[in-house]
Length: 103
Image (cartoon, rainbow, N blue to C red; front, top):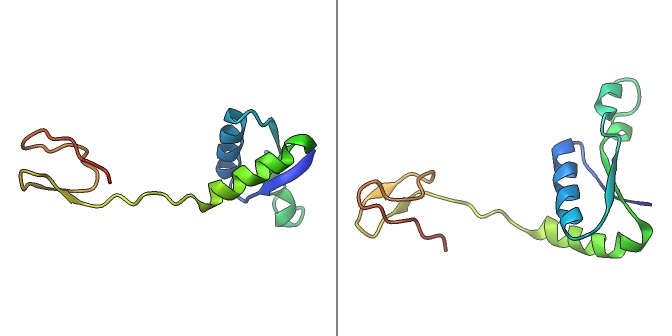
């Protein structure tokens, strides 16, 4: 197995593991409980690590690169076609019921 990814945030490692497994790339997380050792050993040594099988490593590296480049879409306030203004959290117009269109 080869180490693919390290992060101080376990949720980030778990998220990547989930999407890689959807691509049929088997993974394992090491240091999942490592935060309990913080202060006892150097902090970088207890970060969660994502490991993949040797034969899946090139495919996983390529996927990781695309995953890193993906930018989340920023949702902002919007104005409905009927002219009503809405905050970013609303997905439809309260006045006419039109669904928000995301570009």
